[in-house]
Length: 244
Image 1 (cartoon, helix red, strand yellow):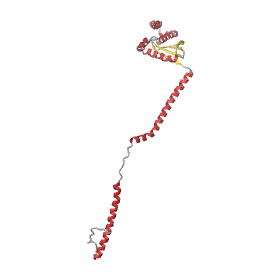
Image 2 (cartoon, rainbow, N blue to C red; image 1 turned 180 degrees about the vertical axis):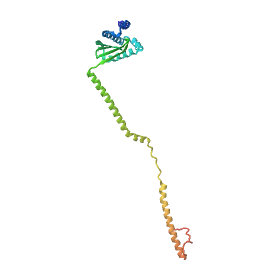
Image 3 (cartoon, rainbow, N blue to C red; image 1 turned 120 degrees about the vertical axis):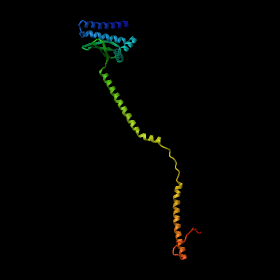
Image 4 (cartoon, rainbow, N blue to C red; image 1 turned 90 degrees about the horizontal axis):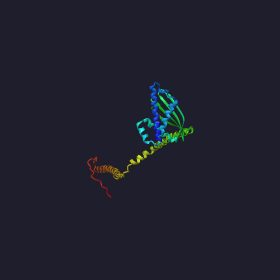
């Protein structure tokens, strides 16, 4: 039964296009279409769309979506709106606007959860150019969504700022971590036993040599005086021994 209704609706649309074409050939422009005729044409298009999206014509829907981008966008708009709209109840308001470029049909659809405005646009050749479904939310729902969006945006900003502050505070630990990884074990250095001991020895040797020279000079002077010599240049002291 549904398939026969779909076929009947399509035939109605085709006949409407043919009638408009014949009126143009007779000298009557399609802009002479009445508002009721435009509303009827748009309503039939909407009902056909809703029937195809009902789930019983998935094959036909997929084929039409592949063949026509306008139909694919219309199917997508209606399918996404049904999640908030709920089940279709009836069309409660109808209006049409005819201009030089085509005509626009507006339908207010009653749903079990929310109402929706359906806008159907036709061009000057009475071809469907777009079909969009807009859910009608209450003022309270709109304010709730705005508050949630604001809270989400501000929360995201604060989370990012906290994350940045944590990362900046971690910069204080980077030098310590780097020093811990690059620290080399201390190497034990040998005590400078020899150089430390060498300095006193050398000082003692120098002091001892200076003492011996003075002693040699004194002894040479004493020997020269005992021998009656004028100077001690001719005396050579070979060694000095301390007698106990």
